[in-house]
Amino acid sequence: MRREIEAAIIIKDDSDPYDEVDAGEKLQPVFVIKDRDILGKSTSSIELTAFSFKGTSINNISYFVEEKDTMLNIYKKESPALLQAKEYKADVIEGIESFTIEILFNNKWIKTWDTINTDKLPQMVRVSIEFDDNGKTVKLTEYARPKIGKEL
Image (cartoon, rainbow, N blue to C red; front, side, top):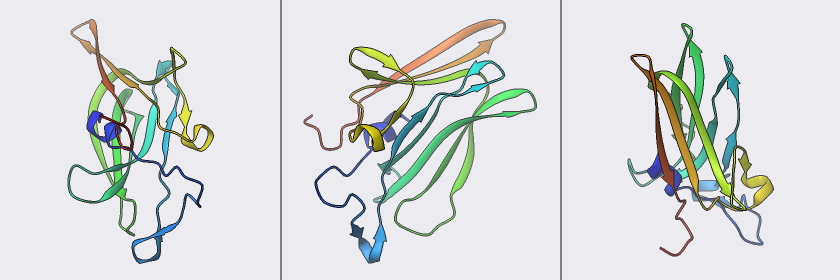
């Protein structure tokens, strides 16, 4: 997930952001984070367009939480951004307690973001997953910086 966030893209210039690309298809890149609540637990979702590390294509990718058999599971959907192809859905992690995605904005961590409103990628993203390990809550946190179009 960190690599995909770091490879996220948006189109930012004065021209139509949905200019035609290869074979008349239109690229409509997004980077959207939503704050949700399922069973009283934090369950963020993220939808982004990014260069795929699986090949040379650009993909639409989303991570989200769904309840299954009273457990919260993280799922991933992915499909090519420029081709008419069926998306696939995969179960990534089962039995989590929470999944939180936050953006560092004006020195505060916020839980929603949409490039339609901001016209830019966030500078820093924090992803946290909590799960139960034999009665003890464990929290794993990873940070990612979108890098496309920025100096390294």
